[in-house]
Length: 338
Ligand code: PEP
Ligand code: MN
Image (cartoon, rainbow, N blue to C red; front, top):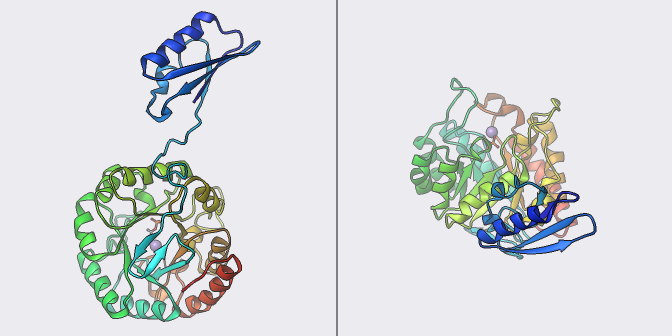
């Protein structure tokens, strides 16, 4: 961290800053220029209470050098984290494709969809049993009955599954059934929930909040990591912007930015990022081309009958057509899809 003093700040003001820094247990390195003095702080700046320095008279601004996240940062771990789920690796050279309905609606719907996506080459199944709906009057999911159906679909297809957990008190129940715990966009900053999944041993798929910055996403990951769970997969799922032609705006930059800042795997959800099935193939291919480690795509056996997110759900035939296209893009950028 660097403290930039105002032009012509006094010797007393500089001394006051240095004394405060030293009182807090840090070392101060003074660099006195002709007009301006800069004070370098030596020590882990993340633990320094900035507010006790920034208002000292003579201080112009404080410039942090380290990222506020630690365990999630590439400085802390230069090599990519690879997370194993059964035979699938997320974060290695392999691209993972997760597919399935937005919500588990019935046995027939789930099994038909699961078998179709498996046949087309998906490696993991998705499906919500606890749904975080914007309206309390919308379908809220089947709860534990939905988890049982997901477990049955796993048995029939061999596909491990990802499902959302929306309450800290459900983490144990959802973990009993699922292979990966999903934290949805609306809960990205539900710190009690992050704590609870941080104490679990299950991989966590953490989705970016609707209005969250990349830094906030990484700070939320930090909550999970700092509670002892290092198996975190990040997911860019579009953010809210002024654009109304799509449901959200896919922040494609987020993928290489997160890759630069963090060692954690990053996947993209082209379904929620766009909101329309006609946009899903383009968003999927662009995501793989720019370095994503995988995709989570909504597929429904009969999208026109879906209780949730039908407009953005591919039908099995669309998904089957998309898979080889994604594979070609993956190969073009030196990745592979098993
Ligand atoms: C979902 O995956 O179905 C979902 C609700 O996604 P998000 O949290 O990204 O809106
Ligand atoms: Mn959905």
